[in-house]
Length: 72
Image (cartoon, rainbow, N blue to C red; front, side, top):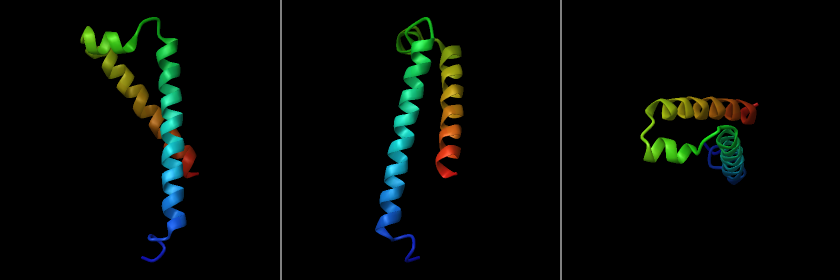
């Protein structure tokens, strides 16, 4: 239990979380730039549910890869 409360572990968890979020944000921006249309407008304004499903699947895939790479 004392190992869980170690400040070094807490800082490392925060650092790896921040790195993972930054990598995900970069990947999502890359996906947005690779599509020929504006994702936000298509999903939110035009209510394109098929595109929202595809973007959600891509997001989950990116998150799984980032999590696996950060955990070792």
